[in-house]
Image (tube, rainbow, N blue to C red; front, top):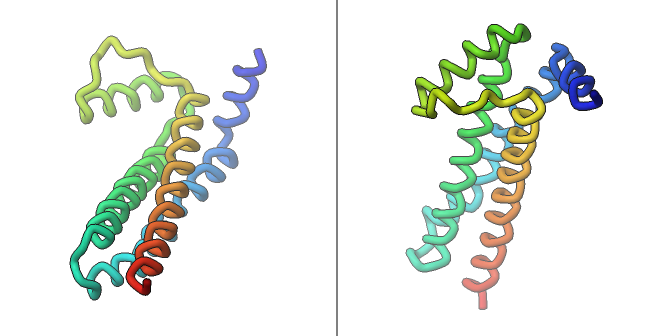
Amino acid sequence: MASAENEKRLRRPVALRVLVIHLASWRYLAALTLPPLLFVAVSPTGPGSLALLAMALWVHYCCWRLWLDERLFRVLPEGSDDIAAFDAALRVLWGAKAGDAPRTLMQRWAGARRLLYRALAATLGLWGLWILVLWWSLV
């Protein structure tokens, strides 16, 4: 019962706007990759630079996923019939099996939250790695 109540609350336009606003933070996370990428561009090639480049690519992949979720949550319909059409469109686009059970709104929110945390952790990891590579290059 509490789950149905929460899902009903999360379906409200203001709740979806809150989620979309947080998912839109992908812009800032992508911008935070620029200093380490500039360092890679001007520093000699080495294992540290390659690791920074790989980590920056991971952050940008996470940012792309956040961007995609932001756009998808903007068009997520409110009616249950429209949710089925929404899921069918995603299944056709990404090749999921027709028998897969549709995800609830709570599952969608949990996935978006997990993705946001993953992107934040990847950005922090990139900066931590960059500081480590900077320190290593000075020693």
